[in-house]
Image 1: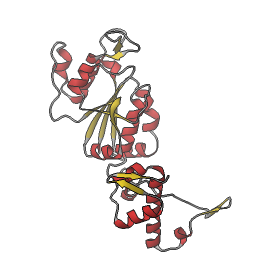
Image 2: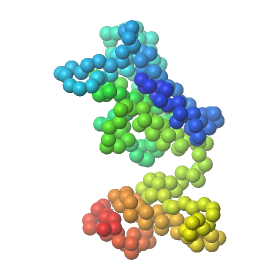
Image 3: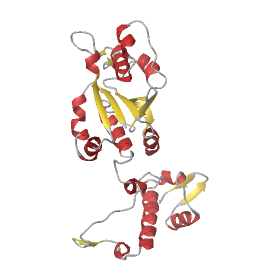
Image 4: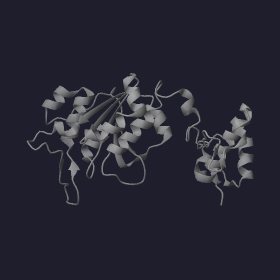
Length: 267
């Protein structure tokens, strides 16, 4: 899978993308990440990529032409678009999805990560300052994503989150078993993990984990996922594929259902 990232600050990505799993995935050929400096496409001698907003107000707005030129080049419909400054040439219909990172976008989730993982290539546009000019968003951006209900100084950190979450779903990046029971994979949080020693500063691990009974271990882990979700994210239970046994277990631990789809946690 390939990610093309358009940013004013490509150096910000050096550490996260050159360490650990993402580094190994690139070395193994499972993942390709290309960074494109938006400022490279600015035409004035100062290489300015932003300007004051019409109507006044605080902050600066990223220029439409600079982002448009960058997208035209990255998406390969560049020569005419780069030469003709008066005509808006639409992107080719078979292009990869172009996604802008924005606090006004839909909130990124594991479901969206799984959806994006089906594409062989994705283009991410990192906004900065007060964001990007609305006209280029309307003509060239397919989707906007946010990583939460807060505001960052730019889209770079959000883009890193999206790349990490999507890349780890690609074949070969992680072992298949590593993602099967992770938090949010089926709207349940992950069960607790323990490693050696079995007793640490007076705290011991649950006996079931050293019982050697694989069925009991699997049952304990599933029940822990249910309980942890109930305690920490009860809102997810309305989406989880719960069996009758799951529902009974949750009710025994304080779960109440006041209306269909209205599950409440421990009070």
